Image 1 (cartoon, rainbow over the protein chains, first blue to last red):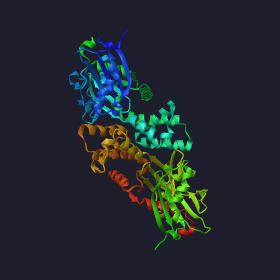
Image 2 (tube, chains in turn red, purple; image 1 turned 90 degrees about the vertical axis):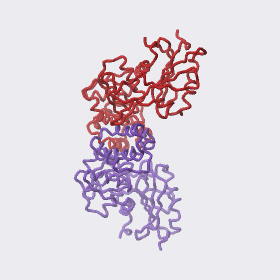
Image 3 (tube, rainbow over the protein chains, first blue to last red; image 1 turned 180 degrees about the horizontal axis):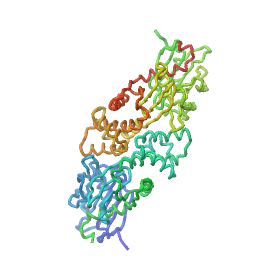
Image 4 (cartoon, one colour; image 1 turned 135 degrees about the vertical axis):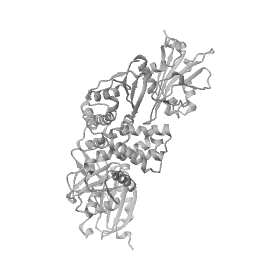
Length: 306
Length: 306
């Protein structure tokens, strides 16, 4: 049976609002995980080290000279994170082992590295964390050529060719959805845990075919609530549909005629799948945690990847 | 010199976030005004009467049997306002004197009426307050045929013909602008009191010609801040431009080949004017307070409009 004392390396995905940590043994196997740590947005730079240590204290070796490597991807490497890991510039491979950033720490038991994000100069765009997921997917699918779509707060569409990120485009769809459903005039009209595929697809087709009507269709949800007393289930489904319809119209140059896979929250990926199916596209959904860990493994010391 | 004791009628524009009140004498002249009362959103139904009385107490007659008429337009007539004034259904004249709603009051010195809003069945849409501004404009321009654009939190495009509201379309542009600039990942990138017309117009043309790219262009503002350290003045101007570009593309069936005037906040109307000029359109800006009061005058007792 595996034991915390077997942990010799720690990997982490430190995003804006969440922190996931894996304790790894010398063969590269996961011994333990922490899933709900605080995200980068709720910490100031000086808090990262003590906060991380407080979570992993009992994973660290009690004595000995070998430092425990800690490899971190995501927003911890942002300008306002633990330490800035300057962006690599696309086109480029998603991870370049030689460009990993070292972080000096007070605690001498650990040796912390940050995976840099990727930037695109024109049109200006950035990613942090997604590059690691992409590297993880490509590590198992080295011949993949096509589009990786990563739905989320800031959905990314990434063109991959010859194991490189060629170009990418981010849409604020998820953040606009959250903002409208939590804090706008629509908020009381779209509170529901249920979903209606027909409403979603109708709304999707409306803005896919006429994306300029997006902000008018959004107000129409409020009007439908007032005038027709439409159920919040239908209105929430339409809100998703309108936003994803406009995004898929804008991302057409990415997905048209391409292979495509998706990485992200499963429920959200399924929404994109339903919409893509209407456009005659299929896209399989990869497990986010699996591809993230596989990506982080690309920068483990060689002995772990044998 | 005019005197508070000359006030014999009170008119009010009671919106979501603001209340404006006019004290009027028997000839229809304004004797006094209150400009910054609490909006409907911060009051529950039972608070409207005591709050209004507290503001106008010293305008009310000390004695006598004649009640002081108080005529109110705007969100005070919404379902969650003072009392619901059911929508009139377009196509219809903006105000129908016979459809004014009476409100019962505790205080016997006043007689309160609410001007109903207008609804459109398909596509579902609503307005409250704008109908009074439109009525005010038409009272001085009875032959107007064309489009009235009312920029604001929820911008309205209204087709007027033969003194009726034929159809209208609302865009959430203003609310999306506020939400993104105050509470999104863009908030630190767009804090500025300055404005750059060139950036605004460039951004306007981007989304006017390709509205599907709106949510991607919005994320690009954040990326430009991170990568190019672009001044917030330019980024804020672009945020406005992207949102108005997408709206004007969506409202094309309204403005194309039409006469047009605008009613709304002057600074915001000037932005729309700049954008419309790029499309070869001119639209004069009407003074909001003037048209609102002129609209309310349409329901004053006949003796005031001689």
